[in-house]
Length: 149
Image 1 (cartoon, rainbow, N blue to C red):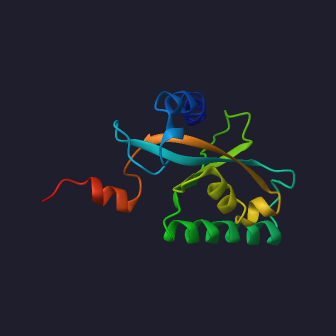
Image 2 (image 1 turned 90 degrees about the vertical axis):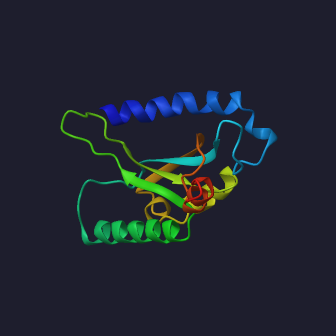
Image 3 (image 1 turned 180 degrees about the horizontal axis):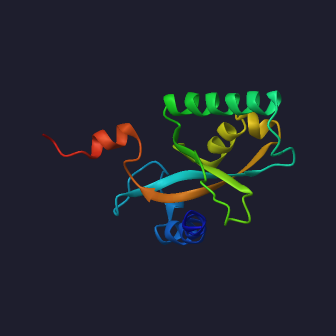
């Protein structure tokens, strides 16, 4: 339940934090005066073709979904991906997981999201939202932000 509350908090606060810094006036990948920048967070939900049934087809689709995640992570465009860890007390498990993309625009993040086999098959849907987060989530950013030895 805490994870759902955290996700809801991000959804509520991200737009106001981003607007406070007026990200429209600068590139979303530039560090601002607060040491922050815009990333694109994707919230994955059950799609119209979602089923709890485990079949050869759903297993193959899951394997393709994970392979796509690895591909996007290896080329640096997907920083974070993972499912939510629900337990039996969570009555609504329709929100399935998150992606955090390192792209310059929402359109680029949406294009990457459409490469996901589970999204293309309708098993999952994804909603992309700009997220105002700390600069340094990418390996290149971490190296640039690290103090000199």
